[in-house]
Image (cartoon, rainbow, N blue to C red):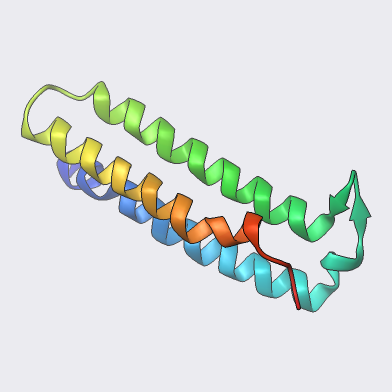
Length: 103
């Protein structure tokens, strides 16, 4: 069971993160978070960018944990999964930082 969890952890984190960001985007737009100014940005932007950064940190933590696994196939698969998850989080979450909020 540990092997299966390590092998899929990175992609599972990405799937969870993608769903979470999508849900936060909908809730934020519907709730008017993009109109609430807060520390140089909006509450909406802070919530999305903060969540995206936490997801990236989680993926990095998965990579570090996979690196600590016993050498061999299991370690390699865990690292590849964590790296794929991090790359997917970076790419699919980039619009959070680069685009406008609720236009």
